[in-house]
Length: 435
Image 1: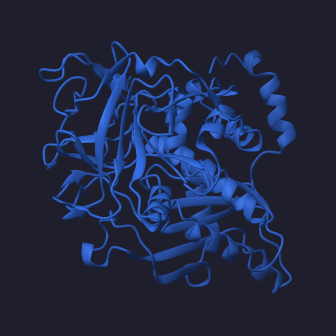
Image 2: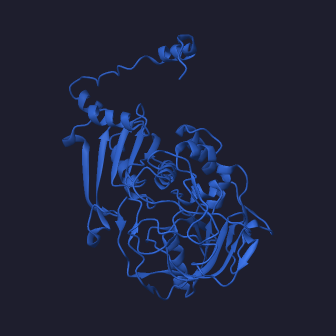
Image 3: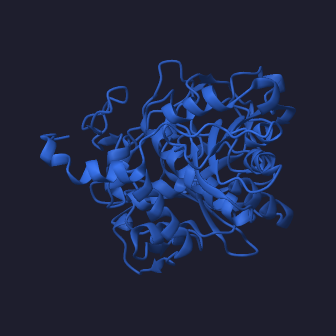
């Protein structure tokens, strides 16, 4: 279905479980736009995200919530309501977390973060929780560790689309994910206090798992291998931070949600690439660098490794400044950054390739940085050296400076004049075209 951009799938009988499982809800650009009540056009999606960042709407705490219609205090992840599959035939564990919200809170500032992390099942009430030092969960965990306390944590499964889109997006640290989701919805997200802590959880999620993450010990067990977002089997980690589940609450008839990880196209790359693009654009604007028009983190680049940025050039070294910011963004792991002029749509892969073909000379326009920050799940390097990665920047803007040295100008585009195109658009139906 992913390869065909097909519909979402609802599995009504997963093994011996009575709880159904849904996947692929946001698996296409069309459904992504529909979730935001806009069309599939990326400019409309981008505008909605910009509104959410500029006008976030704080959540609304409620006293009654559908996520608490049933409360289970004897947690067993191998019983209803947990129809957790082995997503790939080579997976070493059942993986609960592929599209959900892991909820933590900064104990000093109160900042609540929602993220998606790998949660393998170790025991009936114990989950793994894979993270890295760049992730917001790790930052919160370190503060609890310094305090000598276990970290309260919750996992929400079966989210409304606004929250689901935010959990996999590169929202900058310190910004409330509930508020950004409210901005996307243009109304407050309902939240409710958890049963076992002061954490605030989505009031209308299908299912909530509450627990805590110890800060003084790890779990001695492998969580892999697992079919990862890059399209390859990820390795095993022998020691883990882990979650001890205390309580599960859920709707009377919940639907479990997950997504199939792997190579593009799939739901995971669609939502991560789109959300990552919106986060990158915000990150560049907030940096103060001038001239940024748009940014695209590509689906073919696994939603993190490749980025294209369009700019209006205004000073020497501007392209190099873009490289530095893109490579330094902590919530992405970009290896290849292509910078294009504002006449090239970074979301149009054909136009980007055209700019590469007609504006780039490798010796002049390609920059390589050795041994930058890497990502452990990048299969292009062996695990022993995976946390370091080379970076490549390609300046695919017009080489106007080099032309000026010879008192010449870069050739004008052969595209039709804009006014002629508009005349044709106005009379389109007169020509008998219906597309």
